[in-house]
Image (cartoon, rainbow, N blue to C red; front, side, top):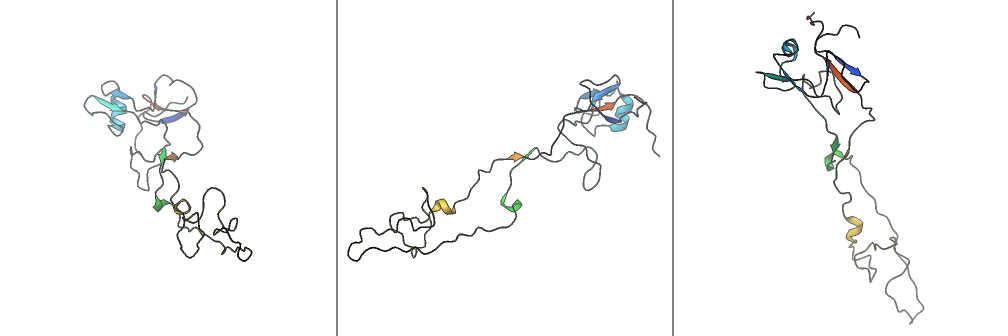
Length: 177
């Protein structure tokens, strides 16, 4: 590897941190052992600033360049989210149907429900009165109108590949400008 700057972060495909480097895993380090690195990053990523400081923790995180509201050391985002009503685009659900018709020979009608003529089949009857079909009643079965979904969080992660980020503990001192 070319001589790194102290505090430089690189991506490394190995399963170990090379000599002079440390995984970016939020480890707490001793200020007295790594004075120059502490001078550069301070307690931006943690530590007490008296005897300890932390390296950045990039486990399960994607680094983002500063700007648009992010400041150095600030973490953001979530691995899972639960959508609220305000996050779902405005939309409507239409319910359509036809007025049922039924016929029976004069004087021989024995049923008051026009079987097979309703717009909801299966085990859920569209109207709350499942014995008598009365479109004038206007009451729809709650199974047709109730909310759906359980409100559980869902994964909010782009396609990813696990790989190590490492930070240089030693090397060239990065001079500004």
